[in-house]
Amino acid sequence: MPMTTDKIRDSEVFTGICHSLDLSHELCPMTFVRTKLALDRLSADDRLAVLLGSAEAAVNVPRSAVEQGYRVLGVDRIGADLVRVTLGPRP
Image 1: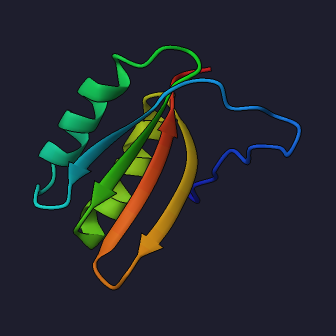
Image 2: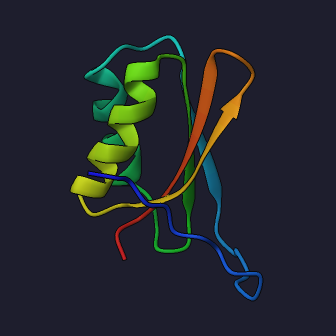
């Protein structure tokens, strides 16, 4: 199943807090367990940027987030080994 990301329109203004979570040294399934715990604490306007260090986590965290009803706002490669996944709360 292809994963889609929600695009933030130019007219949208982000007014929440962007939290960050460095899981670059964690392995699956703990990457999503820790991500979900952080997502559950977000308010409606907040975002969560998760830094991941494995290819498996870079695929599984966004996919699991979508399956749980969270929004994937972006997936960005940072260098050769890291991926930043930006997530939003459930709509």
